Amino acid sequence: MPTAGKLIGAILFAALSYYVSEQIKLLLPGEGAGASWLSPVNALIGAVMGWQVMGSNAGQGFVPATGFGLTTVFAVTFWSLLIWSGYQMIKFAVRGRYDGPVEALVAMSDIMLDYAALIVVPAIIGSMVIGSFICAMVTEFFSRRWS
Image 1 (cartoon, rainbow, N blue to C red):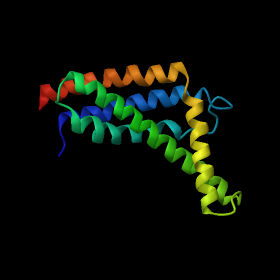
Image 2 (cartoon, rainbow, N blue to C red):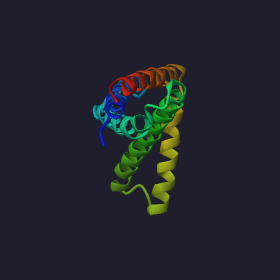
Image 3 (tube, rainbow, N blue to C red):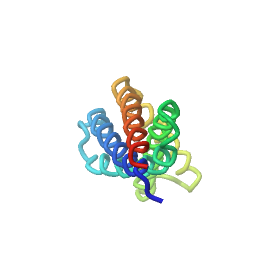
């Protein structure tokens, strides 16, 4: 059932995901050339996780909201890494780079780890942590105010 907390959580975490994705584009080779879908797809993932994780748990207080905000941003990060590494694996598989499905899945996990290593930068981590804290507090405020 839609609530104010779910709506606000979805909007805020979509915006946070979009902002962090724009920062990540600057770290990619060629300054993000060819990564035109990165921000919109990650914003969609952020909206879904903001609705499901943060929004579903909003209204329990400001202290638990910080934990739910961090959980949400980590869920967004996990699903984004999984989706983009899967996309890259499929691109390689279509080109015949793998001998079988097990090799493709192992390569996908390697790609996921490579992408994770790319984003472990203080500016990215700081944006995610501080942004999740702000998003969680605002979501909690509006959840209490409108629900």
